[in-house]
Image (cartoon, rainbow, N blue to C red; front, top):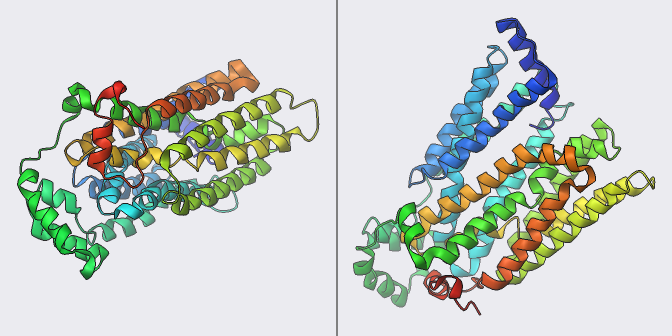
Length: 439
């Protein structure tokens, strides 16, 4: 919504004046807008704890409900509909993002688990780029069409909603919670081919059926109070929070205003922002080939350190921005390097690492806590970055740089390698908490 901010705020002023005779000051408008943005984040934090087998379908339903709210809020002169749409989007995303990584991991063969895990952040990145393009002033971003730009996501979600009904159930879920190994074998053959189930795999599934019958999903409280989950929960929560605090949300949520502060005019700033989105998408696409060819642990380490270094570089450049005429382009280059660094690890691995560390009985609750960490980080950025930017100026990116370096240290000491390992082996490796020997 960064591109449409002036148009939507202008509309809000007109609505409040026409309906209530109220005229908002700049500070009051900033408070109103902050409440619009944070409503989505708060509902996302609620939604991530409402996961379940219907979460992805319900998430799409809520997104379909949000689309007409956005489409009709301008015609109805209703800020309430704008809020309702934002609340629906937040709840839908919270529901979906806590379930999709789990589903992708459970339907993926071991050798493709990393590439499949990348599909979620890749889809998010593609959605960001699409949103940037359609909300340009030349398309659906002007004062008369901005509501169509907000509601266009409903078309994509309708397609996804229809497709959900043909998606197979997770074989692990069918065995562990539905007590149906026959259906699990049928799904595996459907996903991987008729010859994918050999005698050994079939015996393994049927032998494990008696154990699976005893499996029960653990609640958030259960895993928080069980010592063997202490380290994996800390890893999952901090990696997801680090993903949100790393600076990516600053770059895209405040891209236009940040670029304007370094001397780039408004129209060019929007085009630069779209360019950043395209580079981010291209870098994210590379994850499809990287994740199953390189180990998770070194990729995460390199990504954290590189993100911290590029943010420090950008901080230095912005501090001296008025000294040399070509420094704004160096700042743009630093942002590009940050995006490339981010998508090699920090921007992808946290989304699926939880499904590689937690066995199925704890997976749903653990992923909910991890997703909560990401939403909480986003809320912190939205609430505090404008204040930090106002008070610290050129040093506004410094906290994100520190977060990246701190996350690198934590990953170095505690993150085990999960590539090529079955989940039970990884879970056993980190079951002794912070005393675990990960190497």
